[in-house]
Length: 587
Image (cartoon, rainbow, N blue to C red; front, top):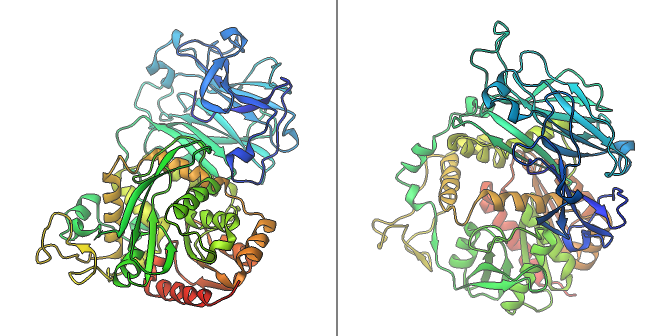
């Protein structure tokens, strides 16, 4: 079974129905008392059937077999065997009224893996139901052309813009002159077609081209889109992107060979640090890693080490600067459940309480990207303690700003296996404009006169351990990414996926935003967004400004996703002015 094929909650009465997605971010709130578990459709090894398993309550990691462990569906047409079953939730007028199971037409016990990829079935199995209990007769529908060697792991997602289902699968292809498919095939690629009834399909097209032999793609709408897939190739050198062709970049090996690479991480020593046990009674306990830089009376909650240089060290007598690792990343614990922006906001409240940062109008909160989503929830939970709230490159809720298919491709590309060289290029491209990446690195660096800073890694004195500039901004961003990736115990794909899920579920309705503005005070709130932000596109920032109506709003022309990096001096100036202004406000 593919990762996502997934689970549909079923009612305790055993009569199934679909529940609307709730506009909340807390998993505990989203849970419904009349639901008893998650239903999954599985195949077991080489057995040619479909089996149902039900989770033990709200634990998606523990399952029990249904139907006494006997198959639910036994195909008789085609090869007589089904693999990779997916339960498809009805969309549009079928939502809550119809479900489909689709699967690969392959009985591997009757053939070999080689033959199954050369002369495999080009059709998919389809069953449908109106109650998730009684399933109609199977049908076998051809979806691919005769150049394909197989159709594997079909899955589907509802495209509301077309009022149809987008069905996708993996196929390999042979030359038109190789009708017997005896030669060499292409790598596997992801294909797709549209259908409104799972009976007739549009002509197939390529969704993800053959570059890494990708199979088993699954798409999740959470309500933002996430994806999982499997690669069967050791060659992960994707074709170069348009930006790579126009803007040649250093390779990972070239970046790590730069003389400045060992000094990419600044050795800024915290005033206080620790790991705090949080979330007792909220699915925990779990430990959150934290540091405070500086001893000043102005208390700031942020998440970026770079900001601590100026405020926590060079001006550390004025500011106390708290940074931390959210659950799932860095040196904090990495549970597998309860990822939401509201849960992470509650973690921060416990951390602030631990530091005795509990006075009214005491906290200056900076949130960037997902941090901005968490900051919104923090303002909702403890508005009376917020002195200022700065929201950079963030959103109230995800909205589609590009066509459905392009949006899917953009999101899927984040999860595809890639070469390291391509990965560092794509990370930088999504975060920053090309013009900034190509510019020389002129970042303000720590020095021997910086309070509380040690020489660069591997050095004991400042004569040899100075912090150096990189040839370009791209080189520095790539070096930071590579340094982070080298610490596999702190940063890994699990944390990335779980945090993406939390961001995907974030939803601040207009009513909640109004309440946030009313309770925190709009004169205390700042919102800024770059017009060239590729991660969270500019319309998201426009919508947040329009709905929240903050006292200060900034549209940064030509800027990308991380304004505090692209425009550090401007960023530091506007937040310092906001802190000073809001500290003098009453109420």
